[in-house]
Image 1: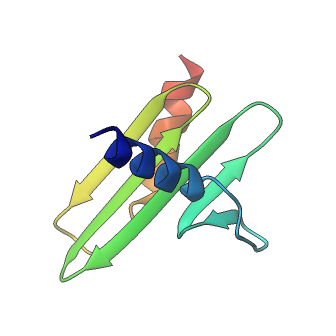
Image 2: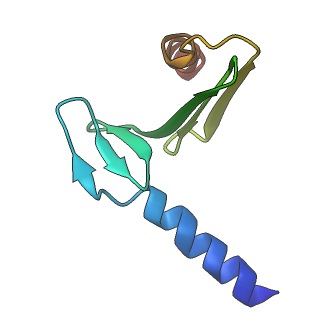
Image 3: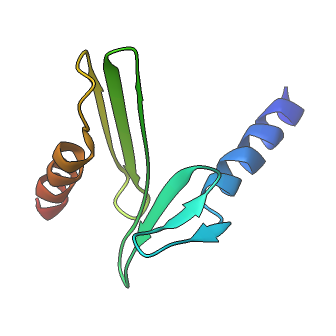
Amino acid sequence: MSNVNSELTESIALTQKVSFTNDDADIGLAWQILSNSKDKVIMHTGRTGGQSSFIAIDLTKSIVIVILSNKSTRQQEVGLKLLSLISRE
């Protein structure tokens, strides 16, 4: 069992390792990495068949936002706004 945990730990670590950079964010295994001098957030979005999803993990403050929707609209703006509001408290 510890081998499985080790592989999972390594895989999760790779999502946070920058493998590509563009103007908006760094990318690690298809997860966007948003960071500044005090915070680090990884996030991922998806849409298919009329549904959409969003997950953001604030690694600094241990906050997770998950949005699952039965509409194929982008949830990123709402999710990041929620994360911002919760982070201020």
